[in-house]
Length: 414
Image (cartoon, rainbow, N blue to C red; front, side, top):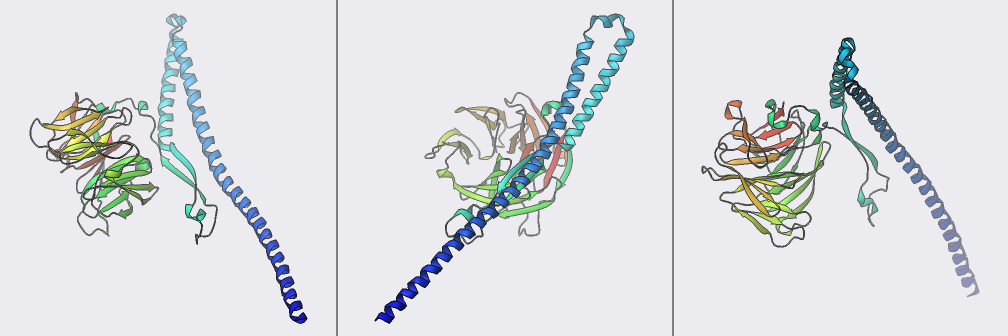
């Protein structure tokens, strides 16, 4: 028994020694991991601050150029009010020439900034699953992503208002891709920042992404046919599925599409949304629950668009009966009918530009019109003679407009 007791004591002592060694090894490894993550954090911090400093420097240079030219032009304006110029012909001519030179410099600077102006977003991206218990993924610090998109300069720099400008066709896109089993039917389209074009293909149950030049980037399959779509932000799109009464949230990051989530229309929460049906327009409150009928309509509503500045929502009503409502506007619980069937017939796609002008597709009349937000000024932008056939969906962003039928037309406001 004494021999066995000594043997057990020896085993306990042996196990205790190795436990101490293991604990010291664990503490050593934790210290080394911390040192490694400190190094990784420093590397990622450097990757974050370096492009920030570069872009910040570029913006400072652009701002300095603008400020110098602005001060020079202000001095010229101030000098032009000097009463002494009345008797100084040579001085007046010199001042005039100086003003002309500054005006040309201003135009050149605007042209330069139009070509180089970018919106830069820096972000730290990592897989959130690495923080979950039981994950099989290796732990890392993620990556620094730099998203640079071409940015439009403020609209006030263009001396010609939108309502006086004309459309010029720049590109015809073929939206059919190799994986499509059916002929395409584009019932929804959105222009995104950087010239990206998102198309909802009803016939193939897909959302597709193209560049402004028509290069196919990627696609994401859906469980049902997509209809209308709207822009939530510069990287997120909401797509309605026509039969399942579902809204899909799709992320558009660089050249990829990702299906983020699906929302059942009766259970929507968050911001108030407007939903069009065959007989009425409904509002879904931010608390969810019962939908509120906002407006009965004589024909089905195919598309809606909103003015982000004043909250007005415009609904296109696909009626072909002369003098019936073609477009109605919702605002603060009231509705105003702003356009009747006439110049457009069977209204389909609709969108609003940054100045509040409304663009409408006439599906049956084969035209695209532009009208003011109150419907007082209406003009045709495109007709069937311009080669637009059966326009269905449209999207406006900056000075670019996309119209879909079986293909997609990219047009510029000039």
